[in-house]
Image 1 (tube, helix red, strand yellow):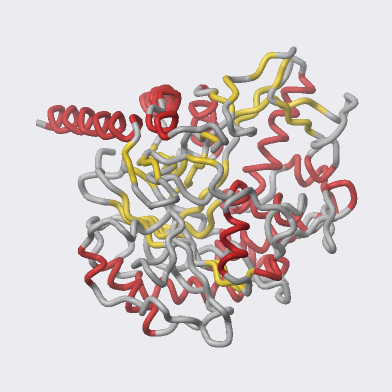
Image 2: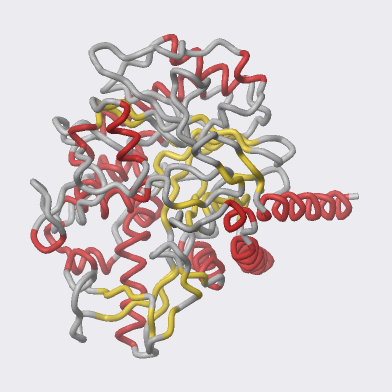
Length: 488
């Protein structure tokens, strides 16, 4: 546990002094052919005047337009047509002393940009000279070009891409995650249309194309089979799921069943086929003929299963039945399992609200989530791959407000205590990652949301440890000392 309970960040800390930066790398002004490039590090640094890679977005927009867009929450006005490439963001390299975490964010989508020797050389050097020998590396595609069919038909593309990753880094990377939050990709990208490729229909959103009733299940089906195709490689290979705990809003049988359906339509939807070879019965019964079918060949591939489950857990909600009860708004439809999700019960929140509109502090949710996965999936090894507390950037915010992050410390303390409880009861949890090391680019929220244990001043890129960073370092040191004492 002590070797992998490390600080977690998705991105290479490219500005900190590091032996990695003295190694051969891609020239700073290198650009893919016929595409105007602009790359931003996790803290907003340009490739042209800073070393290293960050988010790795290649776009047609000019710099001023992009920086203006990224300085505020993203809306649908930023179309996938403006995005040529988003590179993989999930090569996670551990430091042996658990004090710092290095992540490599730049792997190349094979269909969009050939994996040149320059890129391979840079990637190889980062992996080869990383401080730790253990790594979790995600070989997932987040964004596809508008003219491709994306996850509606991407199995062979992903297999080829994964093969390149395994061939290039398989002798040094021990742990691989094929996908990060594929359930969020399917729901937000193909049902609600708020993430690329912005596909939806009907009451779910205002999209130019898509079918919210069927496409999420097609996309999910292809991601599941893509995972199975990648699982044929050597190494420890798993998948990382966004995991929300759902409490029934009442003690009625209907609401208890609704809470179970909520899990089936959110997390089990992916894990059941990978581990048990079939979709959850609730999904089969409700979706019916609109649910893709696994062929005999598919089922044979799915037997490879997985070696670990990554859990990204932040919050919990109440679940209300919409089959026997009248529901309005989100959740009332077939494609969502006829479950309404709400944070309130009798006017009281499930947990303390935070400045992030979807995050409520409910530590029992982590314990219950881990216990649920333990019991449903035969105690498959687990990693808590993301867990953290967010703060919103406001017009009157001061650096002291962010540095003295008492609520983040309290959040981490309580969630880690809940995690320890379920581990003591037998859950096979191998590691915990705090999200995140640095304040960074948080998807639709842009730079307006801060999850970091280190504060980043985006005006000058200064990085300052918050109270939570000192607390977490002390926590790790104390428990590492206890571990060594127990062994002795």
